[in-house]
Length: 299
Image: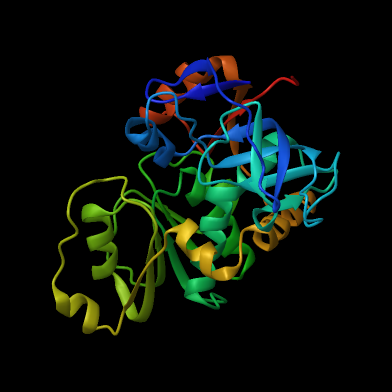
């Protein structure tokens, strides 16, 4: 089968996946791109297939009888292998899609959507609380902003480029932090931005860090943390899901929100996978606002 392979995102013929008894074989119709996958390209063996987010059709149901049936439209999460015509997906990480949700929309939900959803779960109730979302113009940030707004928070979006964030529901949009203090922070930047967010934490705030877009060390005075009784949580979505029993229930929740019109996956670019090279370059250069999706033609 055809796939996009490491290290230079070139197309190549690779072996067909061989599903285990608890895995379904999925005909891939779309996948979204994540910054972490660009780093994966550089560390995988030459010819390896990366890719975490997958949306498509079940070509063969899992042998153990679990998960969606053959022919079902699905969305799933993988540790690798999504950038291909077919993928073997564990059924604990696979959810059936409502008819109203397109493959392009669904492909945005696994990594970005679940990261946003679990960040808010780690924080707890945000009704009436001030929530800061950094990297708010990115894929996770735009979803976290919407989820926090729907949960009753007063949301401040922190971003270099602010187009469309008010329309998504941000109460405030800023490019630097002033005197405001926040009851919760969802940070996708790291480095000085995370340090500054900790300094702006209100008493008993929770700060969730899920990415290190800026590779700089995070430096802050310890009193900024313990002096406010601030809780600092790290979130690595694959590790968190391993203790929660898989991605499927979270994908179902997100897909229902999209179908009901309560969540916009923010597809900034959806093109055929033949345009992978230019789309990957656009993501690497920071030219994508929201999510970039590549569609795969039927084999």
